[in-house]
Amino acid sequence: MVLLRNCFKCSSQVTGMVQPEAKGLLTFFYYKDLDKAAEFYEKIMGFELVQDQQWAKIFKVQENSYMGCVDGNVGYHKYSDTKPVMLTVIVDDPDAWYEHFKENNIETLNEPHDDKELNLRIFLLEDPEGYVIEIQKFYEPIS
Image 1 (spheres, rainbow, N blue to C red):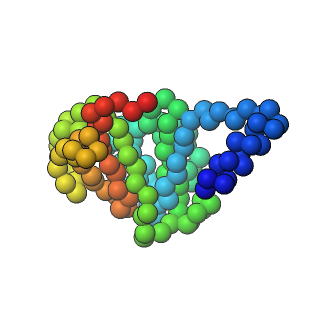
Image 2: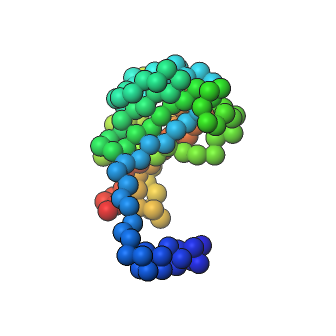
Image 3: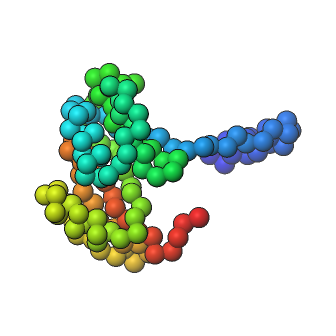
């Protein structure tokens, strides 16, 4: 990895090229039941549906931060029972989110708790098809 990083550094120094800037982030998750997943992210999570491509639905999480739900039979990747990724949502008040989920009869994997090693407050839940969602607050802002 260091060799690769050094290669890019040398390349930009030699060519005078500037590293292009990313404008945002969009991550896709693949579902058997796209409508059920989309309803969860729109109605329970409160994410704004900004684009409906029928087989993919894109939600705005925050400025320049998006997540997409994709029909697992149509998208680039296919649906899988294995979910090796996690969606982390950074919030101001994890306890309020926990109460919101309880009021909407959404089970969580644990209760909000402080992680002293990472200096954050956190709890976990799963979306309708088993993707883990991590709700957390950093006690010291990340920059």
